[in-house]
Structures are given as structure tokens and as C-alpha cells.
Picture 1 (cartoon, one colour):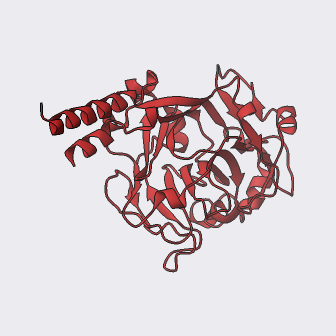
Picture 2: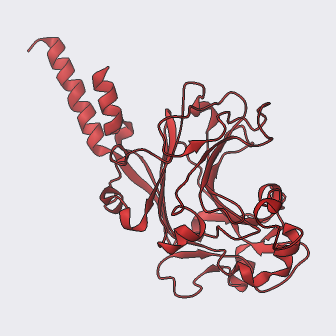
Amino acid sequence: MHSFELTSLFVLTTLLRVSIAGYVLTDNYERDNFFDAFTPFTEADPTAGFVQYVDYAAAMENKMIGAVGNYGNATYMGVDYSSTSDTGRQSVRITSKKAFNKGLFLADIAHMPGGICGVWPAFWLVGPNWPTMGEIDIIEGVNSATTNTMTLHTSSGCSIQKSGMSGTANYTDCDTNAPEQPKNQGCGVLSSDTSNFGAGFNAIGGGVYATEWTSDAISIWFFPRTSIPADITASTPDTSKWGTPLANFAGNSCNINAHFQNMNIVFDTTFCGAWAGQVWTQDCKEKADTCEAYVQENASVFVDAYWLVNSVRVYQEGNGGSRKRGLKREVGE
């Protein structure tokens, strides 16, 4: 062979070897170690919610976390549904002790708190010095919403395209201070699938939310319980086989490496506040005059406002290389 051919063969063989390595599991949060990997947030809600976030001791005393009911090996995170308080309903917000830079995040969730008037649940990633290091909202919705809203929040200089996804982008400028968008709007993608949020999600036993964060894009998929890909079940995830994502935050107008760094995983359930309270009259006004009054006076309606998490698994690229999807691009160049 000529030296050029030998070099090309070596490069191709190396790329194939790296491709086969794919994603490698680095973090696995399940029931036995779940709360050890997260820190409870007990400060005032930054989103002005009608909520009191409590520590683990108070949450356990009030049966808001842990082994409550017949939930098998899942992790339970609920809210207070038995008492009344004029300073906000008790709830739990937790933040991962570990921060991440890129990766594949797989959250196997059996139940979520969505679809209840007054409730604002979210599963998300967030960096320090918000919004400088970014925010990725993977699961979020308020009040009686039946579908998921996925959103990025950044500082100035990050916009996305509207293609390459099954969801619908409502805004494309991710800047929280974008002059032509509502304050803190960010760039959101709306799903039309009622099985991926709230009552519809819970009725099918939930499923897996997968979020891939690379230098090129941030993509989100949802797989219902009966349609979880075999490669996820086998712990050998291959995003190139998953088809079109729900959300595909990409485009030449956003340097993802610059806008998303050192991000922690967060689960929380708040009430009312800057979103659920603001849109109260649009879908819940028959319940009470205000969101706060309803949340304060109707404890029992929040019995189903809980997360049930089977696992959160984080994968990183094996051997520091490209996956199969990237291989095709590199060989073709």
C-alpha cells in the first residue's frame, strides 16, 4: 500500500474503534444512593413560588421523600398534602453534588407531579452564575398542562434553528434578556405528545427522558415505558438509532461550549410563582381567585404531585472520541 492508503486505513480503524466504545456509564443514581448524590435546596424559591423547600430531615418526617407506599425500587419525592400554611406549601428541591460538562443524561421516571392546578414541576440542568453558564429545562410545565415544554436559558449570543426536531420551537433566541421576547423566556420547544407530561405520562407508567449534550447540539428524546430502546435497557445507548428528537437545540448562532458549563442536575416541584401563578387565569381560574389561595387551602389535591424516579444515569463518550453518528461525518469529510 501507499503511505497515504496506510494512513487512511489507520485513521479509519481508529475512528471505528472509538465509535464502538460509544458512551460509557459514569454515574448511576438509584434508590440506594440517590439522595446521597444530591443536596437539598432550602433557600427562598428564585422563581417566587408559593413554596417552602425543606431539608431531608423535615422531608422524611413529613413523608415527602424515600420509601412511601409500595413503589418498589424507585425514589419518591413528593410535597406536603395534609396541612395548610400561609407562607407556602412544603416541597423538595434537590441539586446534584456533581457538576457536568457534556454527556448523555438518561432519566427513567415512573411518575411526575404535572397536570395539577398550582403545580410547577421541573427536571433540569443549570450552571453557576445564572444565566451565564446556561440552563437546560428537560421536563417542565405548569397547572393543567398536558404536554412538555423544553427550554434553554442563556446570556446573550445564543440562538437556535427550528429544524431537526418533532417539537415546535416557539422562540429561537435563548437569551433571557432578548429584546423581542418576554423576559426570561429563553428558546423553548413545545411537544404535542400528551404521553410525555402530567396525567398522560403517569397513565402509561412514564418512560425515559434522554438528553444529549455535545459541542454541536443539545437534543432531547422521550421514550414511553413500552418503547424504550433495547440499547438503553442494555446500558449501551446509541443516539444515532433513536430517530428525530423532541427538541434539537442547534445552529451556527450558538456556541454551546461557551454558554453551557459546569451544570448540575435538579429536580423540583414548586407552586404558583413566575409561571404557574402568572398564567393562573388561563386554565385554572375556576378553582380560586388566585393560585396562592388555591394551593394554601386545598392540601389534598396535591397527593399525586410527586416524582417517582427509577434511575438517573449519566454517560460520557468512551475513549474521548466520537460516536457512530460523528464517525459518518468525519469519514465523509
